[in-house]
Image (tube, rainbow, N blue to C red; front, top):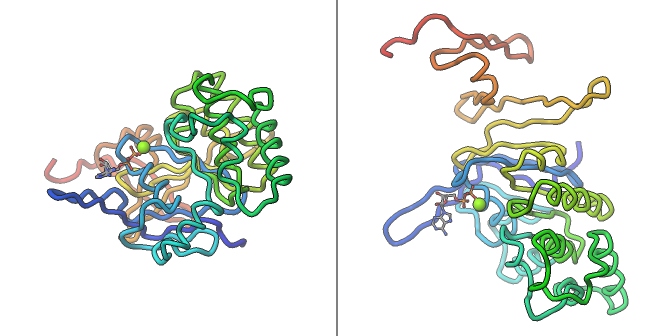
Length: 287
Ligand code: ADP
Ligand code: MG
């Protein structure tokens, strides 16, 4: 097995304000392999943006392990953190315009974060990024004149400037119509492939899930189920995995719960490595 590029184990993040504490991540586990594209889905408030911020090196983990490309995110000096943010990860923030410097044109925006490259190499990489994201003809255009889809394309090119090992994108298609979202994601996927970067994409959008190798659900700051897309006889099918948490509880994919009409008890049989589930017809006591 290869070393994962992202590895979170029992990750906890707590926001502390004067009056209250919010436990945004409560023991989250996540592994992403190099080059893998993972979609993260979950309701509003489930901790998706917090997870992105921790992996991006913007927020420090409160407890647990978060390792990215050999860096332990809980033990970085300020200087390491700065280099990490600039070179190891690329981050597309939720609102595309927030990623863009309004007083620079598209090409200058992509050149701005580049480090460790000669001027000529930087120009070449910027040209490649703009072209792959379909923005080469808009190189001289300023962000204020870009459409939503174009701004998102530019935000991706900027985040990929230093060829990060992991691209993070927080709801990149939320502001786009279906067709535009699809074409942006296709080009993003192409760019990831050519750069050999892994990606974690937060989304509400089922079409984004189709562009990922794997879909992970997050609920109340924990990962709950994972779906892998499997190809069987030329047809792509979803394979849902159950996850057992550290207390030994199994969390069921929603589709199972619905299929079993399961409000009461479910009986689980362990047969070798397989778990079989069926509805238990006995009513649970005291209900
Ligand atoms: P999502 O992106 O899935 O909507 P978030 O990570 O933004 O979820 O939020 C997770 C929880 O943490 C929510 O309860 C939210 O209100 C809380 N939260 C997010 N940011 C802060 C903050 N800066 N201070 C306090 N609480 C926060
Ligand atoms: Mg969010």
